[in-house]
Length: 417
Figure (cartoon, helix red, strand yellow):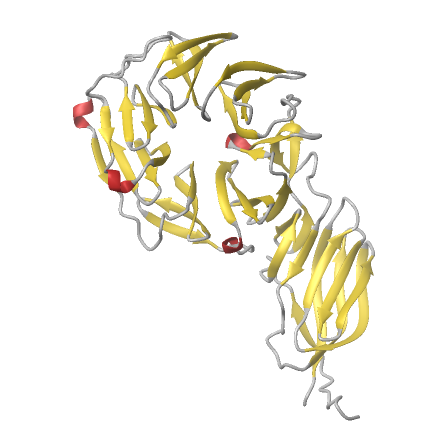
């Protein structure tokens, strides 16, 4: 028959590898070794959130939960209610510290004012303008713009923080403003928008040394960062990497992060969670370093994922932590492949699709012929077909709550012109 061509009847096999490295797009599906499954979920902590506001930052500090919201108010999240703490003009930073055996919490912003929480008592004090605040080596350190201030050694109390004139360091103005402060390996690391500095030394401030850390083979332009056990995790150059001693190791993610704008990165329970955006939609990209599992979760623009795995959600789960059990976000759950040619000739025809599914789902195969939908049942699925095309694209959509896809194989023949 004209136009059909001769067919080499020997069946060839294309098998999706164990990490589904041909992923083009996915939402609310877990990409794990050898299978697609239902994604990470959120376990509620039974803590209330204020209504009709956006959550600009969430805190777990001193064993208590707080959120700063778009109305300029810092709230404490209690079991069945929220408690007004204070008004701030800018998003505050927070630190838990101990004075005479008593735990206290300080919240400070970019004004010369801070509040101290002593149990349920709230008091206002004079303080240094602060974008970041940490405790290190018996001192309190704050960072604001390109300035680092620190108290005298062990000289801070429940209402008095002694920031002397000698306790000030300035980064070069050319480095830009400080955008991250972390204490790792007995040093303080200061990130600006394009540079990384290290402040080392303990004891007397005369022994402090401030120097720039040379970063190799990558840029800090537009990065997001958080500390982890032995260094830093950051998304830079649109890739996920681990930074230690000025050197970075990049990880292969199944999702092309260059398609998204990175907003925030959080490290929790050996997982990296990056808040990202594409157009008007926001997502959480989760990478598990223990298992290699990855997922892209849809969230709303009013949701906030922050430190310690905390998630602030304005609907049915409120304050929650990321895990494998609990409520799942997003009703739209699917996985898309990139265009595939099976590394063969331009002319081929799929004759059989084999796939093991834990539950019902829909498989869509697209190519030169258009698209075909196949209903998958729970169990092994053997789909006989004849789909000639130069390339193919596959999509799996979840029909219900459960999802488990594995042993995904394509049987095809190559066609001669």
